[in-house]
Image (cartoon, rainbow, N blue to C red):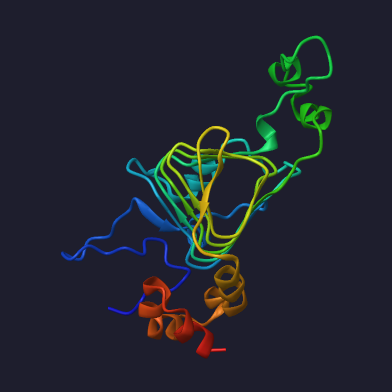
Length: 217
């Protein structure tokens, strides 16, 4: 069976031929003006939404079509069960004495409430990022290429390329590779190759054979 195309909704097929509906390529599952998703980035969920169109709401329940912020994810991302993106739509105005959102309980003022909040901050995630189960990615987070986010982590701010982060607030536990290797991987940018070339070099990509990757450029 050929490798699934990036617009495939359910890219995992079990040996008996049935589709794994708890795993989706997000470009095929999400049609939302505030999402920008790279090819082959997938999400998994042990209790997936019955309607594939609900993946946007499952992953980012506070990102509305009228929101000012966006979620931008690179190629070949891996999003585990229970991950949530907490965008600025979840915030309350906090300059006054109370943070209670009175306006959202009044239909006449409901659509005005977002204007009382500070401008939205985009979430930006690089290529080949693995986000572990139950992690929370907060508004304004900028996550580099090749990052691994530990299960249950709460991530905000900037995360450098190829870091491993964990905890609440998430901190860098260690770097996956040395600075020279990270620079070489970013230069190789294998995620931008066509899929046939990627598959030809799969052993080098997953097997840490940097000379083979660099020889491709």
